[in-house]
Image (cartoon, rainbow, N blue to C red; front, side):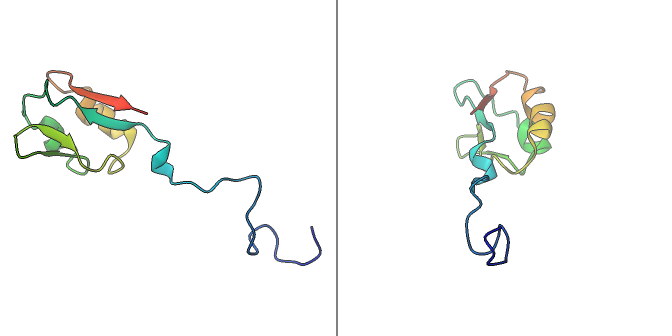
Length: 88
């Protein structure tokens, strides 16, 4: 250590870690609005992430509202027209 005490978190940045928002690095769900039929399955199953827009098509409003696993199982995998994709 530097002899001043306080360790790694004593008002300085640890050079071995990076401060970032976790959601900047997660895959984000995306709905192809042209293919969406507005059935609402994704909205019903994962309302924390999806909603029906004014034109009755699903849209993502909070991509970090649920885990990737849940979004995959409860929306992507069951979409009848396969219009929900992942974007990095």
